[in-house]
Image (cartoon, rainbow, N blue to C red):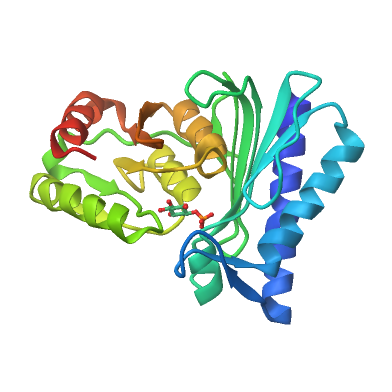
Length: 261
Ligand code: IPD
């Protein structure tokens, strides 16, 4: 287990540092699912680097990443990688993006076991990490989710998809949530939002439409920090990922259902 965690942290740190260097050299930018869904040469280079490292040290493990084809596992373990989560922040120089690496057993995100995960924000100098059953850390120090009194005084994070019709729906749900909470934040990187719940910077976070690489590592960090995390609800192919401090978990889950997120 410790070996998997060490490798996850190493790969995420190498990936984040490589992205920083490539950004300094100047980026090439393209688009994916819509004109606002960007991808850079750095996203592709970081994923290729992590994939190449894994093929040497863990050749029988599977691979699932944002920027290249999946490879089936022969060992039962699969590495789930978002080379740059928060690519729009990365593009604009906002220091809220991360390289996210998790190692999981199983293929369905609703039921897989995440053994270890690391989320590294090189621009901010923060490394979040967790191993199953081993607690969560930031830069090596243990972290815990907060203990807000109620939803009305909770700071809640969320995120938006890249398709206009999906955003319109997400906007309607947020309109219903905003009067019921302290405030809302949209930081722009789901993996870091989950780590923010893990260390009490957010009291809760929910977003529908995440891909496995957006949340695999961050969800483990949040769980190991004592947050209540759910990722089993899929509607029209779009998965809801929610994390909350334990003191408001039931109230938050009920609110998320009521607003139709
Ligand atoms: C995105 C970010 C964003 C979230 C989107 C994700 P990407 O990932 O995590 O915060 O709202 O749903 O797609 O595209 O930057 O890897």
